[in-house]
Image (cartoon, rainbow, N blue to C red; front, top):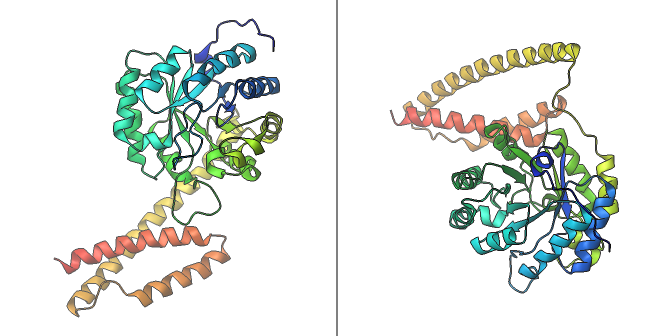
Length: 361
């Protein structure tokens, strides 16, 4: 395969691109596989950064855990022939050193590493004095503080260009996704770090290729800054995560089919209409707060009655009746059962806390 003469990469400009698209194989398996994938992805004209797993943290021993450092020269060659900067996952200080030695442009910290502050600190220590962008995946478990802590540790090491990858969370009973999206956690992370790059990893959320486009579209609708998607020249025979990978051609087609939305456009009429609707929402929110306050005052009165008559705070039959009534009414006005459950659970817990204070006063 012929090498291409390249101008120096402007990594800052590439990372500032919106949407930012990162793609490549879950694992670098052979030099031929890496170069062919890189060439085909570059040919789509839609990929900004090439990714490949060199070291693969696996749940159980015996699984393919990556080719290791010998795969890094393959990425150097892939960068030359494709013109794309390359990114790899690192989990130890030695892996950071090896990746940087072979000219890796972007590093990312994986979910299994983010969950362990000691591991994150080791990576952060290895990054001191280095000017390299670092992307940080959410931890496996739904703990926002661990994610924030990883960002803080890397920032304290002097890394200025930090981004976030939302790859979903492990959750008991989850069946639809490999890792439950729990979109609200990613949205909260974006709220706390409004200027920080946030990209979505539908490959690890889905665990299967048939719903990749659906999840990718939802991420873009939620104003994510881009996507990181696993792509392989022969996905069904991939050495790791075969079911969630797609070919470079399928990757190009999926990106072509996504509706790329904007957070804002320069239109006075649009802004005027949006402001009217937002004013209505603000008014309704104020009314909801007043109603909730009134509800809690009634709950306080009930709590006093329970205290005076030695009745338990929790009344299971009453609670079940409230939920069933809410489900029935909610269905008629287009509210999902999931939302009704979460909302009334929160209201119920607040009522219990109010009544508990009365019981102990």
